Amino acid sequence: HERLSDREFDVLRGIASGKTVSEIAEEMKLSVKTVSTYRTRLLEKMQLTSNAEITRYALDNGLV
Image (cartoon, rainbow, N blue to C red):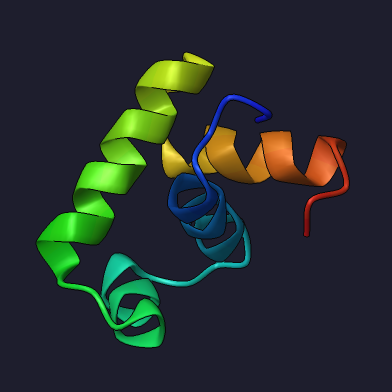
């Protein structure tokens, strides 16, 4: 997760906390599409495939 931008990391933590993309977008004052783009980038960078994997990674590494 060290390779993620600050925004990507915030999206990772939001997803791992059980928030929807819409909730994260509202919280970060961004569009849903922008948050979805950050999610896609973090999945690619971390070689993950789903929100469940994001959550498992965050829990295993004490990020939430």
